[in-house]
Amino acid sequence: MSATSIVIFIVVGFIVLLVLWVAFIYNALVRGRNHCDEAWSNIDTELKRRYNLIPNLVSTVKGYAAHERETLERVTQARNTAVASQGSPASQAKDENVLVDSLKRLLAVVESYPDLKANQNFLKLQEELVNTEDRIQRARRFYNGNVRDYNNRVQVIPSALIARPCGFKEREFFEIEAAVERQAPVVKI
Image 1 (cartoon, helix red, strand yellow):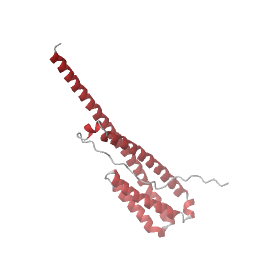
Image 2: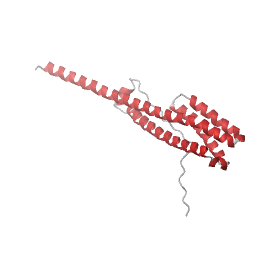
Image 3: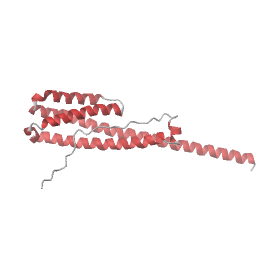
Image 4: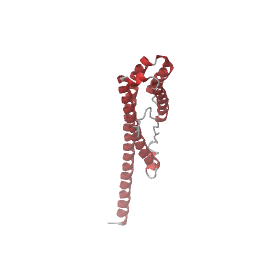
């Protein structure tokens, strides 16, 4: 084998390794982006579940607290805004937080109505809302974990050398508060 053949073999081998390395990083970035998309669809599913519960909750409260019309209208308006929100995770989080605040106000109103707090339909809806909030928070944590991993791939070298030219951009985290939280049982001694 001549010296030129060896040099050509080394150059071709290096090019093949470089192409394989680029393909490996590109595929990892695509997998990360797909994981983020899948995690976002989980959040979207849980938010829709919450949106479907809210009208039932409002209807139940409406029967007991008719003079709390403004609070009920605020919840309905915030729900409609959140349902229509289709922007980035940050803009959707803003709309979700407005909804969460209005739900918290609604649940504070409920405290003034002992009969409502004892209503089985309301208790069932409230429990369903608590379960849905737990599911939203789990989906949010899963999504944010995927976004963190994906953003790390997009930002760190050597994958950043592939990510930027190929159009991979960082994702936004989804930060919202829980509308209701599980209460820890109070132990009296």
